[in-house]
Image (cartoon, helix red, strand yellow):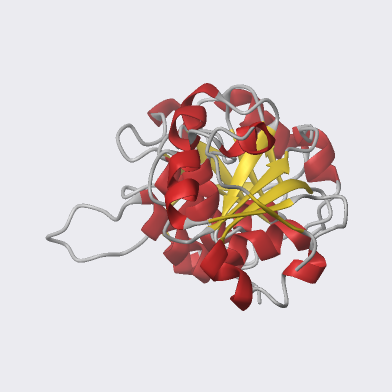
Length: 266
C-alpha cells in the first residue's frame, strides 16, 4: 500500500512517540495516550472526542486490517516495521502488533458531565481506585451494562494509562468520564445533580438486588484495601452483594460487574 511508511531503525525520529512505551507509561506522554490492539484501535478511530496522531503496525498484521486501514484519516502516518524493529521501538515484545498514538481531549468538568446525562442515568463513581487493571475492568463493565458515565476522585489512577485502556478493550474511549477533586467534592457534585448514591460494601445494609428503580443512580466503589470511609457510608445508602457466608469478598472489578448487572435497565 502506498500510504504505509516502512521503519527499519528503532531510533528513527518519526516514531519517537512510540519509543520506550513502559518507561513513558510512568513519566507521561504530554497529553497523548497509547492504544494497543485491533479492537482498541477501532474504538479510537470511531470515537468522536479523540484524535489519532500516528499508527505503528507489525508488517505481518497489515494484511488482516483491510477494514481498519481505510478508516485512518489521510493525514495520519501509518508506520510498518518487522518484529525486531517494533520490539526495539517499544522496548519489549508487542505481541498484538498494533499500536496507535491518540490525543487526550480537554477534561470535562464534573458538573458539566453530570448535567448532560439523562434523568434516569446510571453512573459509576470511583473512590481511590489505584490499580490500572481494576480501572480498565470497571470501565469495561460500565460499558457492558449500560452505565452512562464514570466519575472518579483525584486519588484514583489515570484511565489513560496504556494498560487500563487495553484491559478496558477501548471502553475508556467510549464511556464519558470526569475526574473530581476530593471524594467529598465528587459526592457533593453527585448530590447536587440529583443522584441517589449507593455505596457498595460487604457490610451494606441492603442487598443490591433489592434496590428500587429510581431516577438518577450512582454506584460508589472504593478501593479493595481501604474501602469507603465509615463516616461517608454513614451518610449514604449502603448496598451489598450476597455471597457465600464462609468467603470474605469479591475484588472491586468483579463486584462492579455484579452490581451493575443488577442495576442495569437495559
